[in-house]
Amino acid sequence: MGIGNSLWLVSPEVFLSISSLILLMIAAWRGEKSARLVTILAAAALFGASTLLMVLAHLPEFKDGASAFSDQYRMDAFGSTAKFLIYVAAIICLMVAPRFFQSGGKYRPEYPVLILFACVGMGMMVSATDMMTLYIGLELNSLSSYVLASFIRTDVRSSEAGLKYFVLGALASGMLLFGISLVYGFAGSTSFAVIGETLSGDLSTGPLIGLVLVLSGLAFKISAVPFHMWTPDVYEGAPTPVSAFFASAPKVAAVALTARVIIEAFGGQTSAWQQIIVFVALASIILGAVGAIGQQNIKRLLAYSSINNVGFMLIGLAAGTAQGVSAMMFYLAIYVAMTLGSFVCVLEMRDKDGNPLESLSSLAGLSQSRPGLAAGLAIFMFSLAGIPPLFGFWGKFLVFDAAVAAGMLPLAVIGIAASVIGAFYYIKVVKIIYFDDPSGEIVVTGHKTENGLIALMALLVSPLGYLTIPFVAPITAAAAASLF
Image (cartoon, rainbow, N blue to C red; front, side, top):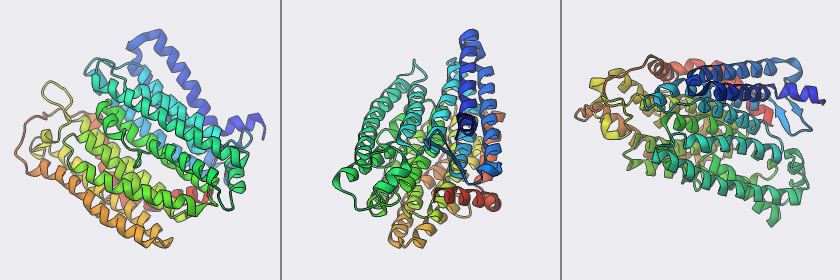
């Protein structure tokens, strides 16, 4: 395929890259007063990239996918679905950022530019079919994320979060690179397809260690146990819009990347990677549930919730079937709505001076002062717990059903049992909101943009969300089929 066709296939990333550079120049020329304009233009750029994505996905010649740059990048239904979720999540995170930062006079136009650069990296990640493309995309996303985590330079917690993320991220990148080098040494190529063909027989010790190291590096990016240690501290210390971004868009990219690496590069070694994924899934579910019980900070609680939900997603991946990957993608879509809704509710938690509140105790009696916000947060908590008839239940049902269909009944049974543990801390939040004596800390500071997003997300994860199944299910099924 020629360079022209390759550039056409990567047009969403090219468009976002050019947009980022233009917005960077606007920020340099106009200074901090351009922050709101740059934010609006960044959201428009993400919408434009989404439009390009849909155009590419519906072209007849690309119906079954197409490769670019000597098979280092692939445009297919799987990557397109993941990118669409990433772009939507990024747009929502841009919408809620200005009010949070401007309340402290800390909003700068670099923020939306960093979000765009991160999205370029994530787009490369989910479409990578070569270890080199994988690493470049992952590092582009990571470098932007390190800066975003420490965006408020005058806040000690934010600086600490950025430093922790950077140090532990560098360690994970080193593990990933060492694993890639081992796999390359035994396969003779960095291409997923060649690796899959070369390592299709019995694995010797060398490539097996490489496989473990690659999965370990990716487990850090999805904040799965035992590489989850950075998540609670970074989510708590980073600015809330950044925490919302970390919990949604990069999570989609990392989970999708992990699925592509496992299915395309190591698909012939099911017995090797399946044991790792099963352990990581169960460990994430259990630790995410148990670790959240004693938390008193709502952002740390949502961090453990993120770890817990990653475990459920990995159950679908552990099945190693198209049905399992489809269930994982459907779960991801529901998870993005639930998580973004929860974090937007956290953004609404402010005292009389407009300062953000994060303690669970500040939610006491919220149902009396802000009944709408209380109802929205309760819906998100129940949905994250997977309590029917809310839509979060459907995501868990799909991954458990895929595991049972793949002959992994014990995995599904343990996962269902562990989900009961996780329901405790979600219900605890609802109990504080509706049954504790009012604290009076959160004042009525409703904002129409945030209130509208909360209402929209609450509708999506309510029983009305089941109406979207006929539209979403074929998309996730086609995405999974493109990997197989």
